[in-house]
Length: 169
Image (cartoon, rainbow, N blue to C red):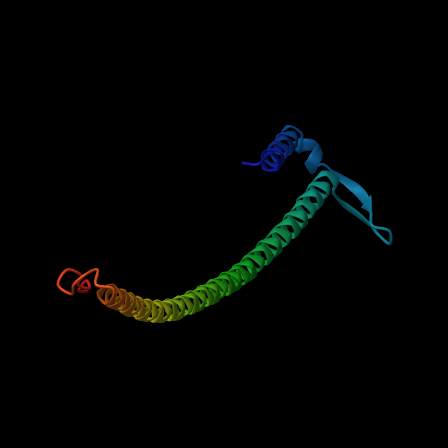
């Protein structure tokens, strides 16, 4: 229990004890003026009734305020949950957009890599063809020079054709 509730219960018990101890004085009749007339009634009971009535009014007001606050708190909680769900959906949407963007970037990078790879393979093939052509030209040039050298040596009678032969590639 809260301290206010305990204090309220203790105050009611003390008041009830006070009324029980002084019940004769509370019930004794006296002349009371209402402003326009006079009445003979028990002042203690009237004051006790007014105290109970004021307490009931304050309790009703407190219950009304607490129930109003509770209803507002529930309303705000529902609105907060709705906003949280909207934020979660927006965040999920952003994650989905980011994932699709990253996938597109990955595909583009793979395409660029494939294009670069095929271009590089084509250039390697061209360079290989060029290198083979140059090797063949060099081989032919070397064979021609060797043949020319052999012809000169034969003219001068230094070497016969049987000794010098061009290498076979």
